[in-house]
Image (cartoon, rainbow, N blue to C red; front, side, top):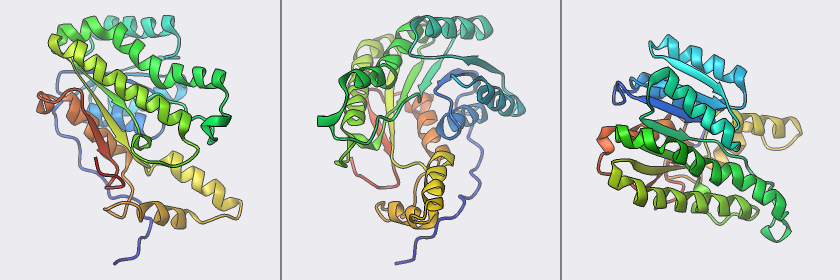
Length: 274
């Protein structure tokens, strides 16, 4: 078996134009997956509404979208706030007239502690972002999504499948998010709106690399060693990139997935089988 060596991924081919003419609202736009959801959607032909708390980051990614010839609207938003969500939907409607696709990647990772030791008040606050914000966004967008026979893609997690200790609170949230997506599919699919989930494993991007770099600086395992450790757990002997996760979401949002709803697509290079 070949040794596993962490290297920069090869440049990915531009996304095909399978979202041409659509408006995609991406919530939870961070430096890795959120950015990829926005940029790959633009490559696929969509105009993009960008939502997150960090307005400076939104502006930068908006420039990337516009450089691809698509329109971008950046709306700094706390999606746990009901009034802010409604303002986001109004801004998107004012700018584009409608929204065809919601992709929500907003989340917070609870502390790595036993569920027996978790603070219930903190868990409630985390669930506001990890679960209820997604439901609230779909509620607020339901009328435009139904009118456009649109689609929803909620970003879930491999934590649904693994049994690692210390993930109890996060596992609860992601299981609830999966149940929410399935229930929303039951309610919205008769109106032409498909609701699906994507569950990534470890994503090899800026955030994970930075975490390993900080640990290496503390004298722990090197970045390459940690990458190899995680990659060894996958069939492909590597970790998926943000663009690979985003492309799965774009597929589910597109008409190529017109017969798919209520499903969860795992994208983890074979770290688990489902």
